[in-house]
Amino acid sequence: MARILFLTPQVPYPPHQGTTIRNYNLIAHLARDFELHLLSFRHPDDELPANSPLASFCSVTEAVPAPSRSMLQRALTTLAHPSPDMALRLASPEFQARLGMLVERYRYDIIQIEGIEMAPYAHWLTTHPLWRSAQHKEQRPEIPIGRPKLVFDDHNAEYVLQQRAWETDVRHPRRWVAAGYSFVQWHKLRRYELQTCRLADKVVAVSEADREALLRLDSTLDVTVVPNGVDLAYYSAYDRARDPQAVDYGPHALVFTGKMDFRPNIDAVVWFAREVFPLVRHQVPDAVFVVAGKQPHQRVVELGQLPGVVVTGWVPDIRSHIAAAAVYVVPLRMGGGTRLKVLEALAMGCALVSTHLGAEGFDLEGKDVIAFADDAPAFAEAVVALLRDPDRRRRMGEAGRRFVTDHYGWDRIVPRMRRVYEALGVVGEPVAHGVLA
Image 1 (cartoon, rainbow, N blue to C red):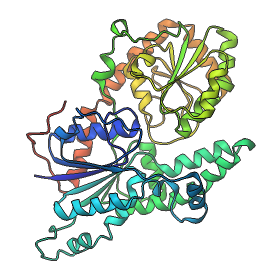
Image 2 (image 1 turned 180 degrees about the vertical axis):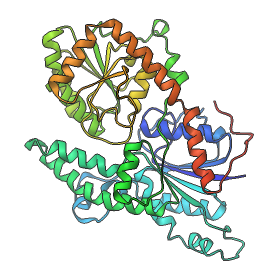
Image 3 (image 1 turned 30 degrees about the vertical axis):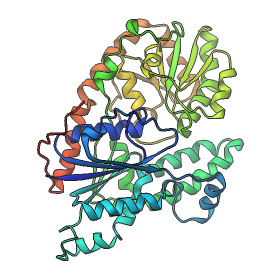
Image 4 (image 1 turned 90 degrees about the horizontal axis):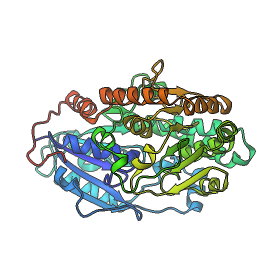
């Protein structure tokens, strides 16, 4: 029975944000065919419900406390340490020791590194004595015969994210400190991300754009695209009329959802609220801009003082807020990878306006599924046009739902990951306990 160890930066349940959504759904579907083990970090604000289905998917599930670093420590290492900040965030002797014990105890066919924050453990594994001995096929009973294969699932082309953050922030003197941070991280990440990709037997990217970004670092890399997906049943099943917690922001609500301490999301809503939304309100005075998502940064909280802007913080069911949108907006100006928020809004039949970067990685050009705009006047014009045309909003919503159903259900995506394993000589077979909930 093929055995795979997943290393994830958070416990992937409940699946409420990008990383956990991807990791949870990969695990839930792959558990049908492989014996899965999971080693994660547990964060102070993590919800850990007792009835988590992870135990039904994974033969081994373990989590160690996530380390914490002060802003001073981060500032010092930004200047002095050769590794990027993301490679230091989850440095943990306890996690490393537990990983070593698992590698010694079990023969893994594959160890899957989920995201750049977990990449230090790929670097450490390749210098582990058992790993190196197994690589040389020394015949000792305590050493697995042949080393596990490494799969690096790069959730974003991280160096591109920091490059874009620098290019955005450097234009504004008040953001020069953040721009300086991004400039340093951009160059550190170019080197580190390339080193990590070269260590892996297979590299996975979430979009063709990210694949191309990694190939710009080294054209010989073996990179396979396994996109992000969406839980079609969960989002399409939502019925606003039957939801006792349904919200109503009026007929001209503009909605953005996401984790609101994430820098690209912060930049997106601040730009929209201050530069775009006033242009919309000039033509549609009762328009409302809703920012829904947990842990809003202070710059986001302050937006709630602007006319027509609502900042909710954490909400029990994000679907009720997406469903309240007349238009769902994706005003992202920095970032990488693909945005699950786009798939969620499309799955719920929303009409969208997005920057080209906001919907990067999805084949949406030329389809009447989404309107694109990249500067404030054009973005406002596109929003107002949709607010005034409910029939077009309905047509776009129907086309968007068909688009994600045809291409982005997890049942269509996970077979791509299985093919990555097959290329490494690791083939699955039905597992009794791997029953998808």
